[in-house]
Length: 162
Figure 1 (cartoon, one colour):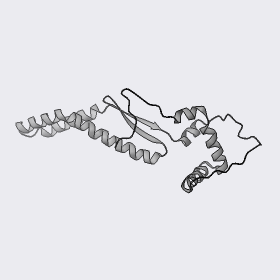
Figure 2 (tube, helix red, strand yellow; figure 1 turned 30 degrees about the vertical axis):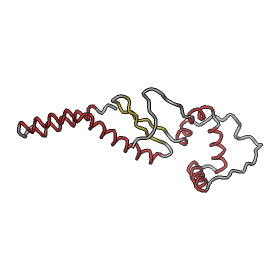
Figure 3 (spheres, helix red, strand yellow; figure 1 turned 90 degrees about the vertical axis):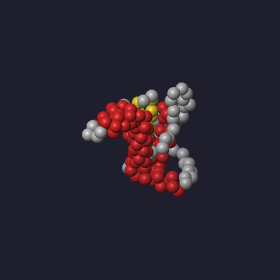
Figure 4 (cartoon, rainbow, N blue to C red; figure 1 turned 90 degrees about the horizontal axis):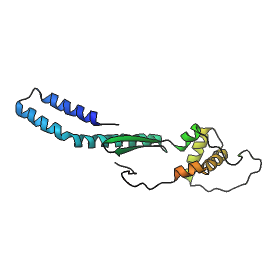
């Protein structure tokens, strides 16, 4: 997203507002308009970052990141696992319908158990089926690589900005 057009529009509006004023006020407005570029870009970036933060709260566990590349702003949307599983269900390496099963005791913190119950209900599945699918999806090589963080060097940055 190129915010240059928004900066230019703000500069034009400032000069337009000063047209009816005297010569010294018009000159002051021209000087202000010339210096507005950097300040306006910072304010717009701050506003876009705040908007991305609000959207991320609504998308959780998905996320929207704002990235700055040179003078261009990019939005990167990371969907939640549930959304990506619905779009492209994982092909399990094991037969999940296999008649032989093993019993495993799983101890979850109460808050996490509540979230698992809600997620299973939202998907219309039993907790057991939901957990089996979650474990199978987590073991997929594609998903495991995506979950690993890579160290970036050069002109790329990763993280949160407020």
